[in-house]
Image (tube, helix red, strand yellow):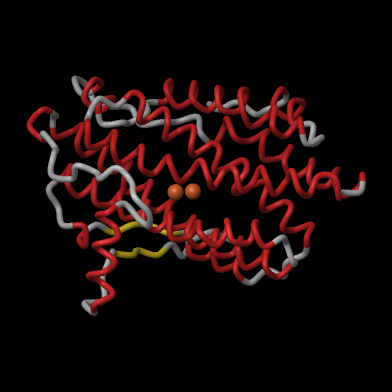
Length: 286
Ligand SMILES: [Fe+2]
Ligand SMILES: [Fe+2]
Protein backbone atom coordinates (compact mmCIF):
# COMPACT_ATOMS: atom_id res chain seq x y z
CA UNK A 1 0.00 0.00 0.00
CA UNK A 2 1.41 3.45 -0.82
CA UNK A 3 2.45 5.45 2.23
CA UNK A 4 0.72 8.79 1.63
CA UNK A 5 -1.87 10.83 3.49
CA UNK A 6 0.56 13.18 5.11
CA UNK A 7 -1.20 16.01 6.76
CA UNK A 8 -0.28 19.63 7.22
CA UNK A 9 -0.72 21.16 10.55
CA UNK A 10 -0.24 24.71 11.78
CA UNK A 11 0.41 25.70 15.33
CA UNK A 12 -2.74 27.25 16.75
CA UNK A 13 -3.80 28.24 20.26
CA UNK A 14 -7.29 28.15 21.76
CA UNK A 15 -7.66 31.82 22.80
CA UNK A 16 -8.92 30.64 26.19
CA UNK A 17 -7.01 31.22 29.45
CA UNK A 18 -5.27 27.89 28.76
CA UNK A 19 -3.46 29.50 25.86
CA UNK A 20 -1.96 32.21 28.09
CA UNK A 21 -0.87 29.70 30.69
CA UNK A 22 0.63 27.57 27.93
CA UNK A 23 2.66 30.42 26.44
CA UNK A 24 3.83 31.42 29.88
CA UNK A 25 5.02 27.91 30.69
CA UNK A 26 6.72 27.69 27.31
CA UNK A 27 8.72 30.86 27.79
CA UNK A 28 9.77 29.72 31.23
CA UNK A 29 11.16 26.56 29.63
CA UNK A 30 8.58 24.04 30.80
CA UNK A 31 7.91 22.82 34.32
CA UNK A 32 10.59 23.46 36.90
CA UNK A 33 13.34 26.01 36.59
CA UNK A 34 15.64 26.13 33.60
CA UNK A 35 17.87 28.56 31.91
CA UNK A 36 15.70 31.03 30.05
CA UNK A 37 16.17 31.03 26.27
CA UNK A 38 17.24 34.44 24.96
CA UNK A 39 14.53 34.58 22.25
CA UNK A 40 15.03 38.26 21.49
CA UNK A 41 18.77 37.85 20.97
CA UNK A 42 19.21 36.93 17.37
CA UNK A 43 21.62 38.81 15.08
CA UNK A 44 19.96 37.99 11.75
CA UNK A 45 22.25 40.35 9.81
CA UNK A 46 25.23 38.10 10.51
CA UNK A 47 23.83 35.37 8.25
CA UNK A 48 23.16 35.14 4.51
CA UNK A 49 19.51 34.53 3.59
CA UNK A 50 20.24 31.11 2.07
CA UNK A 51 21.79 29.87 5.32
CA UNK A 52 18.82 31.18 7.33
CA UNK A 53 16.39 29.43 4.97
CA UNK A 54 18.32 26.14 5.18
CA UNK A 55 18.51 26.27 8.98
CA UNK A 56 14.85 27.22 9.22
CA UNK A 57 13.81 24.24 7.07
CA UNK A 58 15.94 21.93 9.24
CA UNK A 59 14.08 23.26 12.29
CA UNK A 60 10.64 22.83 10.71
CA UNK A 61 11.55 19.20 9.95
CA UNK A 62 12.80 18.82 13.52
CA UNK A 63 9.45 20.21 14.76
CA UNK A 64 7.56 17.62 12.71
CA UNK A 65 9.69 14.84 14.22
CA UNK A 66 9.06 16.21 17.71
CA UNK A 67 5.32 16.39 17.04
CA UNK A 68 5.37 12.77 15.87
CA UNK A 69 7.34 11.88 19.00
CA UNK A 70 4.53 13.40 21.08
CA UNK A 71 2.05 10.97 19.51
CA UNK A 72 4.54 8.09 19.71
CA UNK A 73 5.28 8.62 23.39
CA UNK A 74 1.61 8.96 24.24
CA UNK A 75 1.32 5.44 22.84
CA UNK A 76 4.41 4.34 24.75
CA UNK A 77 2.95 5.46 28.07
CA UNK A 78 -0.48 3.94 27.46
CA UNK A 79 1.08 0.69 26.18
CA UNK A 80 3.28 0.46 29.29
CA UNK A 81 0.23 1.05 31.49
CA UNK A 82 -1.79 -1.57 29.60
CA UNK A 83 0.82 -4.33 29.98
CA UNK A 84 1.31 -3.48 33.66
CA UNK A 85 4.87 -2.13 33.63
CA UNK A 86 6.26 -0.77 36.95
CA UNK A 87 4.77 2.60 37.93
CA UNK A 88 8.09 4.48 37.90
CA UNK A 89 8.57 3.49 34.27
CA UNK A 90 4.99 4.43 33.32
CA UNK A 91 5.38 7.76 35.14
CA UNK A 92 8.63 8.59 33.34
CA UNK A 93 7.00 7.75 30.01
CA UNK A 94 3.93 9.83 30.80
CA UNK A 95 6.12 12.92 31.24
CA UNK A 96 7.67 12.64 27.78
CA UNK A 97 4.78 13.82 25.50
CA UNK A 98 4.70 17.30 27.08
CA UNK A 99 8.47 17.61 26.50
CA UNK A 100 8.07 16.64 22.85
CA UNK A 101 5.37 19.23 22.24
CA UNK A 102 7.58 21.87 23.83
CA UNK A 103 10.45 20.81 21.55
CA UNK A 104 8.18 21.12 18.52
CA UNK A 105 7.19 24.61 19.61
CA UNK A 106 10.77 25.68 20.30
CA UNK A 107 11.93 24.44 16.92
CA UNK A 108 9.06 26.25 15.17
CA UNK A 109 9.60 29.42 17.13
CA UNK A 110 13.27 29.45 16.23
CA UNK A 111 12.45 28.71 12.56
CA UNK A 112 10.06 31.67 12.64
CA UNK A 113 12.67 33.99 14.15
CA UNK A 114 15.29 32.96 11.59
CA UNK A 115 13.04 33.78 8.65
CA UNK A 116 10.95 36.58 10.22
CA UNK A 117 7.67 34.73 9.98
CA UNK A 118 4.84 34.25 12.42
CA UNK A 119 4.95 30.84 14.17
CA UNK A 120 1.33 30.21 13.21
CA UNK A 121 2.12 30.60 9.52
CA UNK A 122 4.53 27.68 9.37
CA UNK A 123 3.02 24.35 8.30
CA UNK A 124 4.61 21.10 9.46
CA UNK A 125 4.27 17.73 7.82
CA UNK A 126 3.24 14.81 10.01
CA UNK A 127 3.04 11.12 9.04
CA UNK A 128 -0.54 10.80 10.25
CA UNK A 129 -1.22 7.35 8.78
CA UNK A 130 1.79 5.76 10.42
CA UNK A 131 0.88 7.25 13.79
CA UNK A 132 -2.73 6.17 13.56
CA UNK A 133 -1.67 2.59 12.88
CA UNK A 134 0.48 2.71 16.02
CA UNK A 135 -2.44 3.85 18.17
CA UNK A 136 -4.64 1.00 16.91
CA UNK A 137 -2.21 -1.71 18.10
CA UNK A 138 -2.94 -4.38 20.63
CA UNK A 139 -0.07 -4.31 23.12
CA UNK A 140 1.72 -7.30 24.62
CA UNK A 141 4.96 -7.20 26.59
CA UNK A 142 6.76 -8.53 23.56
CA UNK A 143 5.47 -5.71 21.37
CA UNK A 144 6.29 -3.17 24.08
CA UNK A 145 9.85 -4.57 24.36
CA UNK A 146 10.40 -4.00 20.67
CA UNK A 147 8.96 -0.51 20.79
CA UNK A 148 10.96 0.50 23.89
CA UNK A 149 14.16 -0.69 22.23
CA UNK A 150 13.34 1.07 18.96
CA UNK A 151 11.90 4.35 20.21
CA UNK A 152 13.28 5.57 23.55
CA UNK A 153 16.50 3.51 23.62
CA UNK A 154 17.74 3.64 20.02
CA UNK A 155 15.97 6.57 18.45
CA UNK A 156 16.09 8.99 21.40
CA UNK A 157 19.77 8.20 22.01
CA UNK A 158 20.42 8.89 18.35
CA UNK A 159 18.45 12.12 18.31
CA UNK A 160 20.16 13.28 21.50
CA UNK A 161 23.52 12.61 19.81
CA UNK A 162 22.49 14.51 16.69
CA UNK A 163 21.31 17.45 18.79
CA UNK A 164 24.68 17.43 20.58
CA UNK A 165 26.45 17.54 17.21
CA UNK A 166 24.26 20.40 15.99
CA UNK A 167 24.68 22.33 19.19
CA UNK A 168 28.42 21.85 19.46
CA UNK A 169 29.11 23.13 15.97
CA UNK A 170 26.74 26.07 16.34
CA UNK A 171 28.22 29.38 17.43
CA UNK A 172 24.92 31.27 17.56
CA UNK A 173 23.84 31.90 21.19
CA UNK A 174 20.10 31.53 20.52
CA UNK A 175 20.46 28.33 18.46
CA UNK A 176 22.81 26.98 21.13
CA UNK A 177 20.32 27.76 23.94
CA UNK A 178 17.34 26.19 22.14
CA UNK A 179 19.26 23.00 21.29
CA UNK A 180 20.63 22.73 24.85
CA UNK A 181 17.13 23.02 26.26
CA UNK A 182 15.83 20.27 23.96
CA UNK A 183 18.85 18.09 24.73
CA UNK A 184 18.27 18.29 28.49
CA UNK A 185 14.96 16.42 27.96
CA UNK A 186 16.12 13.99 25.26
CA UNK A 187 18.69 12.56 27.64
CA UNK A 188 15.86 11.56 30.01
CA UNK A 189 13.81 10.11 27.16
CA UNK A 190 16.72 7.92 26.12
CA UNK A 191 17.35 6.79 29.71
CA UNK A 192 13.74 5.67 29.99
CA UNK A 193 14.38 3.22 27.15
CA UNK A 194 17.61 1.88 28.57
CA UNK A 195 16.21 1.53 32.12
CA UNK A 196 13.14 -0.25 30.79
CA UNK A 197 15.37 -2.74 28.93
CA UNK A 198 17.56 -3.15 32.05
CA UNK A 199 14.45 -4.06 34.02
CA UNK A 200 13.11 -6.43 31.35
CA UNK A 201 16.33 -8.13 30.33
CA UNK A 202 16.61 -10.56 33.30
CA UNK A 203 12.97 -11.55 32.72
CA UNK A 204 13.31 -12.61 29.08
CA UNK A 205 13.33 -16.25 28.08
CA UNK A 206 16.08 -17.04 25.52
CA UNK A 207 13.41 -17.01 22.77
CA UNK A 208 12.05 -13.62 23.86
CA UNK A 209 15.55 -12.16 24.01
CA UNK A 210 16.20 -13.48 20.52
CA UNK A 211 13.08 -11.81 19.15
CA UNK A 212 14.07 -8.45 20.64
CA UNK A 213 17.60 -8.99 19.29
CA UNK A 214 16.22 -9.64 15.79
CA UNK A 215 14.16 -6.47 15.88
CA UNK A 216 17.07 -4.43 17.18
CA UNK A 217 19.45 -5.97 14.63
CA UNK A 218 17.19 -4.94 11.74
CA UNK A 219 17.10 -1.36 13.01
CA UNK A 220 20.83 -1.13 13.65
CA UNK A 221 21.62 -2.49 10.18
CA UNK A 222 19.62 0.27 8.49
CA UNK A 223 20.44 3.33 10.60
CA UNK A 224 23.54 4.56 8.82
CA UNK A 225 21.82 4.34 5.44
CA UNK A 226 18.79 6.32 6.58
CA UNK A 227 20.89 9.14 8.03
CA UNK A 228 23.37 9.21 5.13
CA UNK A 229 22.29 12.59 3.75
CA UNK A 230 22.51 15.78 5.76
CA UNK A 231 21.86 19.26 4.41
CA UNK A 232 24.49 20.74 2.13
CA UNK A 233 24.74 24.52 2.35
CA UNK A 234 24.72 26.50 -0.90
CA UNK A 235 27.98 28.12 -2.06
CA UNK A 236 29.35 30.73 0.30
CA UNK A 237 27.03 29.73 3.16
CA UNK A 238 28.91 26.79 4.67
CA UNK A 239 30.22 28.68 7.69
CA UNK A 240 26.89 30.36 8.39
CA UNK A 241 24.94 27.11 8.10
CA UNK A 242 27.31 25.47 10.57
CA UNK A 243 26.92 28.40 12.95
CA UNK A 244 23.14 27.91 12.78
CA UNK A 245 23.45 24.23 13.69
CA UNK A 246 22.86 22.66 10.27
CA UNK A 247 24.64 19.31 9.80
CA UNK A 248 26.00 18.57 6.32
CA UNK A 249 26.28 14.94 5.22
CA UNK A 250 29.86 14.51 6.43
CA UNK A 251 29.09 15.93 9.88
CA UNK A 252 25.89 13.91 10.18
CA UNK A 253 27.55 10.63 9.21
CA UNK A 254 30.37 11.22 11.68
CA UNK A 255 27.85 11.99 14.44
CA UNK A 256 25.74 8.89 13.69
CA UNK A 257 28.79 6.66 13.63
CA UNK A 258 30.05 8.03 16.94
CA UNK A 259 26.70 7.59 18.71
CA UNK A 260 26.24 4.10 17.33
CA UNK A 261 29.74 2.93 18.19
CA UNK A 262 30.13 4.67 21.53
CA UNK A 263 26.65 4.34 22.98
CA UNK A 264 23.95 2.40 21.18
CA UNK A 265 25.75 -0.73 19.98
CA UNK A 266 27.67 -1.28 23.27
CA UNK A 267 24.44 -0.64 25.22
CA UNK A 268 22.54 -3.24 23.21
CA UNK A 269 25.42 -5.72 23.41
CA UNK A 270 25.47 -5.26 27.19
CA UNK A 271 21.83 -6.33 27.31
CA UNK A 272 22.67 -9.51 25.42
CA UNK A 273 21.07 -8.25 22.22
CA UNK A 274 24.18 -8.75 20.08
CA UNK A 275 24.02 -5.57 18.00
CA UNK A 276 27.70 -5.41 16.93
CA UNK A 277 27.17 -8.10 14.36
CA UNK A 278 24.30 -6.16 12.74
CA UNK A 279 26.37 -2.96 12.87
CA UNK A 280 29.34 -4.62 11.14
CA UNK A 281 27.00 -5.93 8.45
CA UNK A 282 25.12 -2.62 8.08
CA UNK A 283 23.89 -1.21 4.80
CA UNK A 284 25.85 1.77 3.52
CA UNK A 285 24.28 4.86 2.04
CA UNK A 286 24.81 6.00 -1.53
FE1 LIG B 1 12.15 15.81 21.56
FE1 LIG C 1 12.50 12.94 22.97
